[in-house]
Length: 77
Image (cartoon, rainbow, N blue to C red):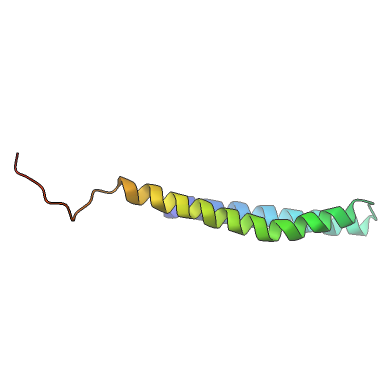
C-alpha cells in the first residue's frame, strides 16, 4: 500500500511540473493557447491532488477489507 501511494505521489508531481513547464514555455514563445494552458494548469493543481487522495482512500479501503477480522470469534470446528 505504501509503495502504491509513493508511485501515485511521484506521478502527480511529474504531471503538475510538466503542466507548469509547458505553460511557461508556451508563454515565452507567445503561443495563442497560453491562456488555455494556464487555465488547465490551475485546474490540474486542484484536480490531480484530489484524484490522488481519492485513489489513496480506495487503496486503503481495499487493503483493509482483505485483512482478516481479528475481533470475530473463531470456532474450533
